[in-house]
Length: 136
Image (cartoon, rainbow, N blue to C red; front, side):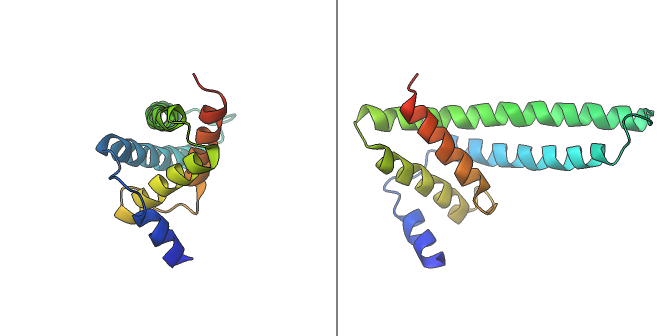
């Protein structure tokens, strides 16, 4: 499977635009920070404890959630634009999905994003399907 993954990742005909690489990296990092902050917040009993530390933890989690949402929207917008461009050239959905999967795999291969057992790839493929079937 590792050989297939690398073969698909190297099969991306053109380099991935820096904007997509940067957005993917930022999105994945924001999600990781959000997850960590939510775990910190979950250690508190919000029905009983409402100390300054708890309040600070909740506010930090809120900020992390907002940053992750903004990063997701930016990354998804770039994927939407890429899908729209491919759709405008009458690429079939199967070809579009192969291309977006290859982008995610190339991002992993180059170290722009960390492997997450396919969760990010699944999100990106889902976005691509939605954007392909429901063009703006």
